[in-house]
Image (cartoon, rainbow, N blue to C red; front, side):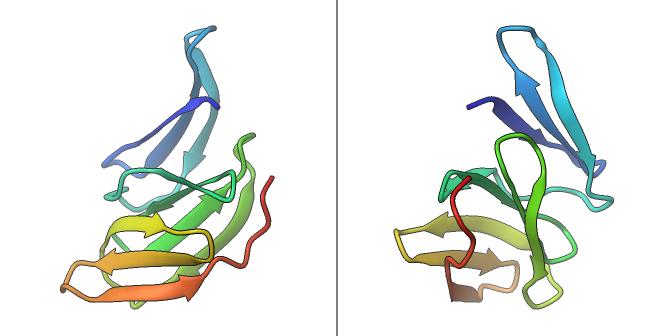
Length: 101
């Protein structure tokens, strides 16, 4: 799996470490504040606008959803649920409904 990096300028990079170059750059347009996490073989990360972005290993969008309109600090999961920590201390639990890629 390539390395993924989110930035404060709203860019999300998928980098091939062997070639030392970006495979894809996604422009999210909102600062990325959570660390990328692997869930169901997809990359999941949150942004300053309260969106959770789900992309496959090639950098294609699988899904994008907003959870509350506030900053998404952290996203973790077990095999069936995704837990989303929001800035005001709220933790949401939602089923993992996207398919592995």
